[in-house]
Image (tube, rainbow, N blue to C red):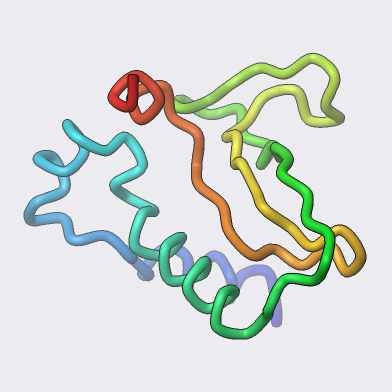
Length: 110
């Protein structure tokens, strides 16, 4: 697919309900991507059963824009980005479960 076509699609595609976005954003900093990410996790769970060994780890999705959830981890190849905690199969490296790290979500649990 030509790069110009990808930009056109990204310009017009929206996965967020803008009518209540501000209300949800107050409670959930990941409000704009929550639905898409939850659907992805649900599909991963349906399509795969985890093996004998699992691994819980963090990954960074590289991002240098303005975002409340952006973190800095010096020992990662991409030092700035959005942190995702993952549960993967140790042998196949298949993603089974995860969540987007946000400080607000962590402080609400304690």
